[in-house]
Amino acid sequence: EVQLMQSGGGLVHPGDSLRLSCACSGFSFSTYAMDWVRLAPGQGLEWLSAITDTGAQTFYADSVKGRFTISRDNSKNTLYLEMSGLGAEDTAVYYCAKSEFTRGWNYWGQGALVTVSS
Amino acid sequence: DIQLTQSPSFLSASVGDRVTITCRASQDISSHLAWYQQKPGRAPKLLIYSASSLQNGVPSRFGGSGSGTEFTLTISSLQPEDFATYYCQQLNSYPLAFGPGTKVDIK
Image 1 (cartoon, chains in turn brown, red):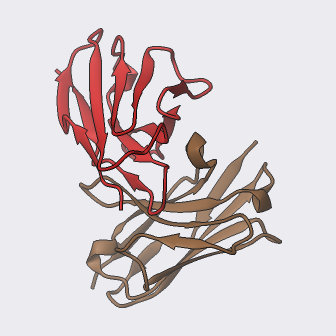
Image 2 (cartoon, helix red, strand yellow):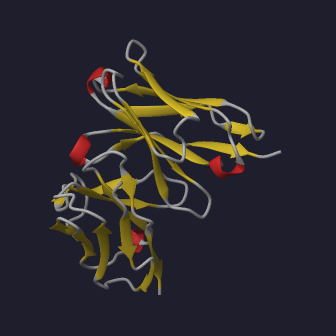
């Protein structure tokens, strides 16, 4: 069974940093690209970042470029999102997803709530 | 960057109604479009990929069509469990993008 288990969310202050993790099982993690998406209160889904299967290429939305870093450890079957310079606009539920490119994303993490507040 | 628009942004419908949601891309994305359903507190669920392919396990009342820049998601007979927010997603090129969403509510 494919599982994506997220951890690392929480309440942080403006300007703080936080790392989200997405531990994957039930599939060959090292052969799939992975993505991060968020859903802010009252907003729609926002794609944030992607990383190729080997980690050689990464992609970012303009809204997080330079502040967020996506990475992966294929030996641990785990995806990461390192977030820095957090602001209130980053308050959201963050999801990781297993990419099957043009076939869409059929597997998602359970979501991690990140709240940025003073 | 490719932008997606959806219409309507909100619709009120009754059980049994036929519902159509439109997604437009700012440039040609071939058939590289997916549709998702999201309910409060839940992760999105993939309904349709490659514009018109029904994901395994998704009821056949859901259908997708279109190519290029205009796409539609149709629910042939709305069921109580279908009241949710629906998003299109372009998978043609990075940066990827979602449409702003269409909330389907009970009339």
